[in-house]
Structure formats: structure tokens, C-alpha cells
Length: 336
Ligand SMILES: Cc1cc2nc3c(=O)[nH]c(=O)nc-3n(C[C@H](O)[C@H](O)[C@H](O)COP(=O)(O)O)c2cc1C
Image 1 (spheres, rainbow, N blue to C red):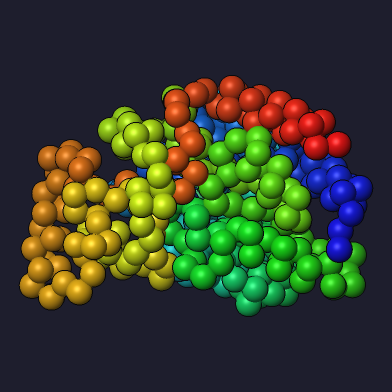
Image 2 (image 1 turned 90 degrees about the vertical axis):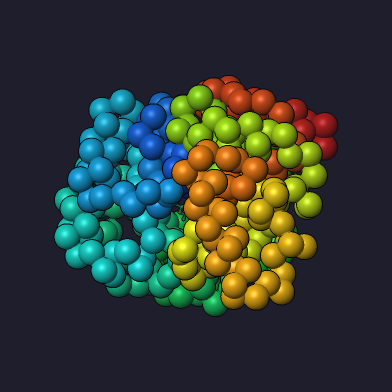
């Protein structure tokens, strides 16, 4: 089992390998983390990722523009882009453009990172791979990725449906520690990490760094729609207030390899959605598509992690980072 000294050494190694001042990584958030958010994180000494998924299709030229804007407003050493592997498989030109871009890192989600790891690393990029179970972590280790992001089912957006952060992080930690290789990946934890106590808990479980998603979507630097931010803020018990389901995509006429965690509301309600007939599903789909057009948050898909319960205000990125780190230090002192 890792001692706290070993843990500290690993985090220090991560800070120096990733050129970070704090072990905090901003997740790629489709529809929320564009260049302003990624750049703001990089200026705070954290890693910031531009999200390329999202409500509308992001084109290659949009991605190229965002990367340029982020690097001109932030610190190029700490800016990356997040992308689903299925998209890279389909868009060879996009892969070439990402390889050519001045970017420190690429975060690969929802699939096997093996085909892309070496080409990206050869172009000087760090490769992050988001995983939801041990088998996926083993695949990412075999691919030689630099950072494994262990995403628990508490996370906002698309995620796995089997492991919580509490089960996933120690399991992958032990797996990495059991290997004898000088080139082992770092481990980051994602899912409901919103403040100092949740950050320290994740580090204690064996993560070398933490990922913030929903917490950062509720910042002025995020482009998450204001009505979405307000709906997340008003969630007091995310056990009931969010749901993990395939309906988040189905009712928007989309499909995805992973279920998605979104807020429950008038339409996205597990009690109402289970056991629907195909006819009822198409009616709900119509309602959802109309709600998106009419900007009716009560019937729209609003991605949110379970950490929403304890987020009470919209805060600038610098304040979120500073408060989180201060809380971690205070907690460490009170525990020692
Ligand atoms: C608004 C939002 C959008 C997201 N978009 C993406 C995405 O485009 N690609 C991706 O890999 N993960 C996405 N995620 C998941 C994040 O990468 C991350 O795993 C998650 O936010 C961590 O959990 P938390 O939200 O509880 O902090 C999204 C999450 C949210 C809340």
C-alpha cells in the first residue's frame, strides 16, 4: 500500500512532468470549456482542456481556432484538447491537425487510445486517457499513455456505470504499482471533485492529481449556458437530482457508447422514462428537441456530476483553484 510520502513524491513527479504548479486538471467539457476556461486554468498553473464534444458539432476549423486562442491567452505548456477516439478514427485530417497544433496534451475519451498514443507522443504531446474500469486502464497502460484519468460514475457528462471513484482509483493505483517499468502513467481521478475535501480524498485514494469538471463549468470563464449553470446550482441532493442514463442521448436523437449523467427535471426523470414504449420515446424526443429550440431548461439535457449538491456559487477559476488548495492544506493540518 502506498504511504503518504510515496503519494507526495508521485504528485511532485507529476507536477514536474506536466509543468504544473498544482495537481489540478480541468476536464474537457463539451459546451462549457472553450479557450477562456482552458487558458485561465493554465495561467493558474493547472492544466486546461478544451472540450470538442457539445451541443453542436465542432468543426476542425473551430477546434484549430480554439487552440490558437487558448495558446495566445494562456500558457501553452498547460493547454490541451479533449477528443473522443471514435471521432479521430473517422477524421484523419483532424488527427493530423491536432498532431501539428502547438498543444501540450490530448485527452482521449470513450475508447482504446492505442492507435493514437504513439503518433501524438512522437509529436511531443502528452496523452491522457479517460477510463471507467480496470480493463480499460490496463489497455491504456499497455498503450503507454502518460496520464490515466479514472472517471467514476459520479461524474458529469458521459461516464461508466459500474465503478465509483472510491472503487476505481485504488484499483487502478494498485494495478499501476504492481507493474515494474520505469515508464508508468500518472493517475488522475475524476467525478464529483469540487473542493478541498473531495480533492484530498481522491489523492488519499491514490490519485496523483484531480480533475475538476462540473465545478469549473460553473465559472464565468465557462461558456456553459447560464440557465444550465443556474439549474446545477439549485441542485441540493444530486443522488436524486442527477441521473445516469442512455436517455440523455436517445431523447436528443443521438447515440453514445457511454451513458450520460445529467440533471433530473420534468423530462429527464428515471421514474417517467423507464419502460417507455417506442412511441412514447419518440414523443419524449420531440418534447426534448422542442425544449432545446425554446431554451426550456426544465426539459433539456444539462450535464452535471453529483458534486452539484455542494456547489453553491459561480466562482472565477482562480478563486476555485485557490480555495480548493487552501482547503486541502487546512484539512491536512487538521488531520495530522
Ligand atoms: C458539462 C460537461 C461536459 C462534458 N463534456 C465532455 C466531453 O466532451 N468529453 C469528455 O471526455 N468528457 C466530458 N465530460 C466529462 C468530464 O471529462 C469529466 O470526466 C467530468 O466532468 C468529471 O466529473 P465532475 O463533472 O463530477 O467533476 C463532461 C462533463 C460535463 C459536466
